Length: 435
Picture 1: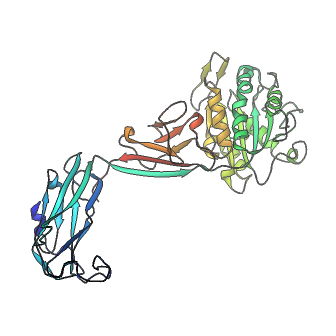
Picture 2: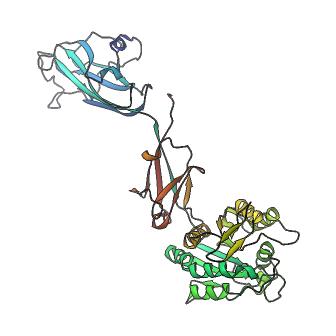
């Protein structure tokens, strides 16, 4: 590495005296008028983590002669067990500085292994008191580069939520599960301090008393028992039409003449709109599919991001079963596709944990996120850290965060889900290349 000392022409240096170089009493007098007096700044350099075999950016060291006689620098050498990882670059190895004259040299760091390095750069001169002045240099070899990204948890303070419930004969078990777990959904809204409107319709368009009409009064912040009111509205029995028309029911409920008549007072211009369907069958609305419905639905708001359609249904490509709740669900590709086209989410109607599904739906309805996807792929999950408002969050499936390999996202759960306005920061290593 001593060859680096012989590298000429690497830098051009300004040898003019800095305005702030003065004597110890700030009078501008030399500290020692009869001898050279060396000052080397800074006293240490820390290069941090640098990729193995990659040179770091150079850092500058300044030598100043504060004395009244010429300062002769006779060597600049590296010393210490880790010295081979550092390089010194100077226009000259031997040089003389007149009183108040300044000279600079540079140091870089190229780790050869994934270990800590600690060495010194020694400046040798004819200073009678400090013949050798050391600059501590440190760094560590890094297998990968650290990458950091951040998000802010945004949300809508005003939210209109339309629930579409399948009240056909096969749905009694699933509706009971929704009803018994609705406290989770409602609890999120209360905790967030949202201004909400909640209404319920069924998938039955054959019965004229239903057909997109709300199954009770709109539930708001002023409703004395929102959970009880919702429960009674969801409990429409299992005698509804076997032709489940979720898209048709949603369109009827949010369109004229109902939206200005029977359903008046629900839809607000300044509120986000979230529709959630609960069904064990795919949509069967004549002449309407997920693409057409989603296009119409997104157009209800000037900003499409303020309208989401979510589904608790069967999967897109296969049936599912939940014997505990008596659920036997058919594939629902149309509903799943509608969630993708409107920015909503899909939850399985056969899930064991309805409370978690309803928590996710409530957050999505409020425009919040529980899943944050990464810009790059981590090379070592064990070295990833996640903070919310500068507090580190544990890796935990219940009340923390996990990393999902398939989606390359971090997913929060339980009490760890970031609140409104929270700042989330993820730091993780990524495979790097020398710049």
